[in-house]
Image (tube, rainbow, N blue to C red; front, side):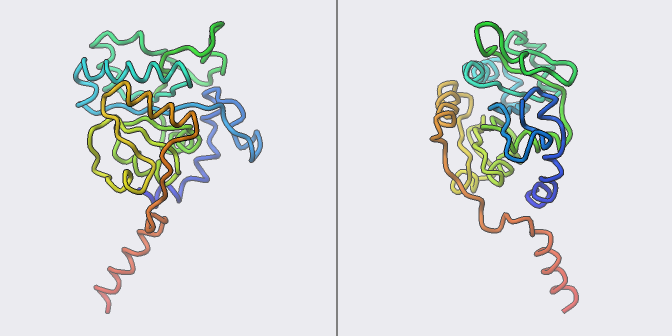
Length: 222
């Protein structure tokens, strides 16, 4: 996974997804030193989080408070969309059915629209680009916990445990489960520049495949 990320990162940054989402000044065409409008990226699909209405609602309570402070971008998984409809939670979201969108859609006359902005699922390169420029990623995905550590992006994991413990001890990951107060508190740390300072584990260097080939060659041909 790390090898794939590092191999594809520069290509991912050439995609136009940030411009298409109205995140101004984020594309390569805007200049190498340009930065996107700050945003948080969300993924949420695990049955433990979205198949129980109470759990889903607790998570949304925290996410909506986050959305009052920074736009929350959510390429929504189809099964999550199904559960949103089933539980009648549509009011928490703004659904954007087509791209591109204008940056003005994230605001109204009062300021930020305090809802989660939903888009269709994205391809790998587009999502990687979004992740690389995010202020933080809120997720219940296992793989994204690794990818954010490699990218040095704060990761707020909506679970009570992880199969990637090294992302907690060395990386940028924190666990908040479905606790609205913890979700908001960790995002507040990010916005204040006080998020967890992690580092990439030593051998997460993009050369795993080469080491595997070297070991196999030694075992098979020596």
